[in-house]
Image (cartoon, rainbow, N blue to C red; front, side, top):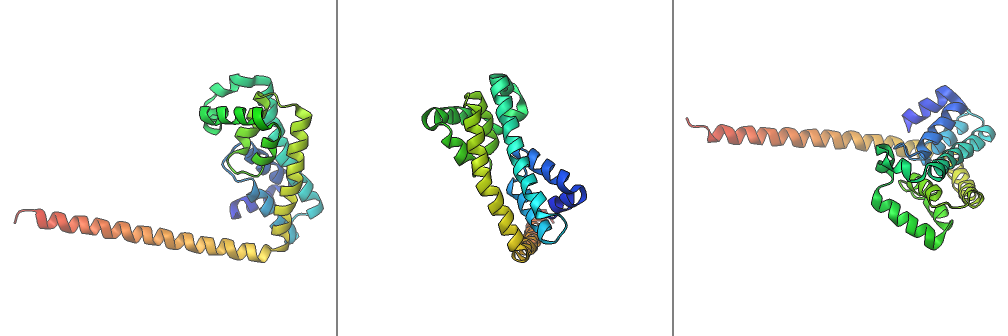
Length: 200
């Protein structure tokens, strides 16, 4: 979370909005990370919570609306774009279209809380011609629950989150060390075997 925090801290509210906007578009940044970072920065007094929280909400919903708009206005044409197909595969498109036909706007509510499915689901909502007022109401309603919850958890439990992040970084260093040790052991064993196989 450190890199996202630094980006947001440097560009403050604009950086926060942009981080969430691109995350909503399918860039591989979990949407929760900028929201949690904003909560931590608000706790530290680097941003004002009463500005940062609405900015988080607007950044999330704006990206979702853009995806819906692209799907609604350009429809099947965007599916020929390689970046779009990485997010929305043929199989996923067919499954989502079938789900929208069966369950309608409830898919929007579900997808909002599923990492990796949001961008594909919101793009497909436009392609499936889900009525925009219903899409916006469902998406904004779900975001009004999820965004303040993540922000509030980060704001009130900053110390615990930082301890967890520090623990993760320590674990990552141990994993890298053990991987290097295993690789070195394997290479040494290979060299030893080859040395024994050579004719003397």
